[in-house]
Amino acid sequence: MTQIGGARYSRQTGTWSVPLSWQACLALRGLFGAELEIGPELSKWAFHERSARIQPAMSLRDALYPTVENPVLDKVEYGDVYKLFPYQRVDVEFLTTTGRALLANEPGLGKTGAAIRTLQVLDEQQRQPFPALVVCPNSLKFTVWEREIFQWAGDDLRVQVVDGSASKRRKALAEVAEVYIMNWESVRLHTRMAPYGSIELSETEKEEKELNGLGIRTVIMDEAHRLKDPKAKQTRAMWHVCHQAEFRYALTGTPVTSNIGDLWSLLHAVDPDGFPTKSKFLDRYATKSFNRFGGMDITGINPYNQDELFSLIDPVIRRVPKKAALPQLPDKLPVQYRETPMTPKQQKAYDQMAASMIAMLNELLVAPNALSQLTRLAQFAAASAEIDENGKVHLSNPSAKVDDLIDLLGEMGEAPLVVAAVSRQLIELAAAKLKDLGVSFGLVTGAQSPFERAEAVRWFQEGKIRVIMLTLGAGAEGITLTRADTMLFMQEDFSEVKNLQAQDRIYRIGAEGHQAIRIIKQVTPGSVEERKVQLLAEKRGRMEEIIRDEQTLLKLLGGK
Image 1 (cartoon, rainbow, N blue to C red):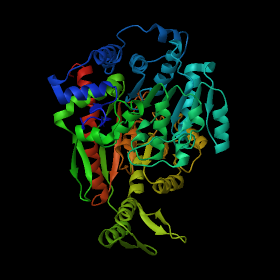
Image 2: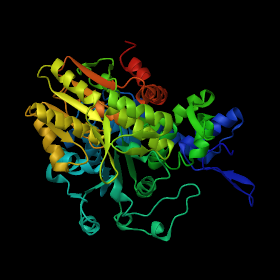
Image 3: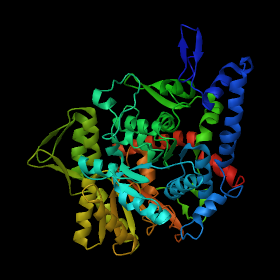
Image 4: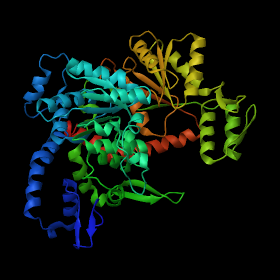
């Protein structure tokens, strides 16, 4: 019994209890098999749960086309310019049927539109989805969610974007609206925290705040992979708001960062009774091994309990691969790697830092620990560096990566290009070079305001600039750059989620006119970047083990 999440033993009665959930029933059956005796009340509940939610959800989770008519959705869309694709109609049916689910379609498949239509259908069904709370990255509040709600729902929904100072946010939350839109970082300032493990809540964290008094009926979490860390205040704040709501939807095209542990936190947000305890979830369904620091790493899925795991998570997760939903999209070519050997100046600093954690730039630079050393090695693999008068390290020329970018632009003629990197300094170094050469460009980085970023995207899409350069922190989510068929990664992030999200800026609805999509990655030979390539490949393998895109494609495309 101790293997089941949420199981509790009562010394007074000598009995065990578990949360009433479909997942608990499956775990009990998996543990006890034919020895398990089912009482009449549980049998009645399980029959209803299976027929009303589980079986319909399973029939919908992989479908590309609706199997039955949906007159309520037809009524919502009647006379509307904006209409859902067939697979999006299935998305809406899945979300309204389950009430609490993870929509994990690949990026660029219109999860936003499906979520908005879900709110409208729930309203038509008189299931009272309002007020609803949309939580999204800060850059998407106005440019995506407010705009898309107006496009899909017009003036039917009153929207409040919660923005600005604390007093302005409280004022916005005090206004009557059907939909409130907030960024992830602000949520924890306006709600009580949920508990987790041995973390003790302060008195302030226990207090009910503005969000808790709104009577939120629906929570939509956009880019929900931000929930992966259960210890983070942002995650625990989101949990509390979610668990007060009737309808809970997590939207992300990258539900797993590196292993199955990332998935639990999202599942707990939408279904805390089904997935109550992370430690027991991992003990039963994950394989682990010791790392070199003495801690435990999750290495994969426990093969003995794999079928049980999928039977637990499949009814609450729908994922449609892009290749199945949009076969008209061009093929994505195999990744092309371009070696960018370090210049002598870069190589000297790199070798010194690698050997002794000390490098001689214009001044002596010392790395106090292994993490700092890794950061410096990544910098020297990208460009030369100097120390300013305040003691801060800045990238400088020469840079083999910037030189290679110029070479690539020459090879491409006048074709547009999207450039991505982790380091804003590297992006700005490249921007200075493009400016000197008279190449038109725009920037999407943390140094630009949301308006400036939106303008850069618009200019690029309209053909007014040739190159757009983004950092993976500011530009990996929520923007469309489909004018280009080529993206260059000057650097990749250690998070494969950010890398995949960035790729989907050009590989999404709107890219149909291209013959193929090309992803190019610069790699500095003999540097930490080579090891990063290996680590990311391992992460992709673990992600595929969980999301099973290849298996889904074979099923949907008839084995082709």
